[in-house]
Amino acid sequence: MGMLAIHPDAPTAAARLADALEAELRGAERRRGRVVWALPTGRTVLPLYEELLRRHREEGLSFARAVVFHLDELWPTPPGGGFGAFLRERLLGGADFREENLHFLEGAADEAACQAVCSEYEARIRSVGGLGHVVLGIGINGHLAYNEPGSSPDSRTRLVRLLPSSRLAAGAMDPAWQDVRHALTLGLGTILAARRVSVLATGEAKAAVVAAALQSRPYADLPASWLQRHPAVTWYLDEAAAAVVASRPVSR
Image (cartoon, rainbow, N blue to C red; front, side, top):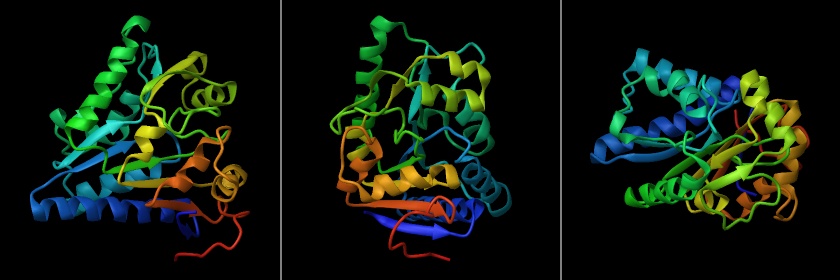
């Protein structure tokens, strides 16, 4: 099942995940190393990013040792910007991340170049020793990044077709995004190869899919269920998202 960390509300769940990311950064500073993260887009992670930026401004938390890959990108990326722009605006641009440590999927690539773009992204991940920590949300349909239902647990970074439910969710963040029918995404195999995975899920709308991902057998129509195969997954949930999870330990 993975470790469940259930908290009273969404800000608290986000703050506890921020604690884990801060601990990794502090550890990297002590050993003069680096952390390698994959980070998502979405409304669920906004409290997390706001908390990390607060710690940077008020407590001097440095992100200079963070290498960041972003999870997915709309294809073709709309003229006003896509998920990479969101990540820059909501997190990366507000702290001391180093530009040479930031990696983005190229949503402006033409279709013929997409396979090369995805292969090169995988090569960049390998070149830094693999992903250390992947932070995820979970879609209403159970997708992780944009690995839609039916995705293979061995899949790697690739171009995918988006389901209507995913397009609607994207459109809720930016109306221009709802018209985009494809995306570039890290694969499930890429995610499952990370040393650590954290899932942040909040709100009653996520309760059913969270319970299914945790308690059903792993199967292709519920991509999040493949996380059961990973040895180091933590689910950061608020009470609403955990409402129908059986036998749930509570972290306060």
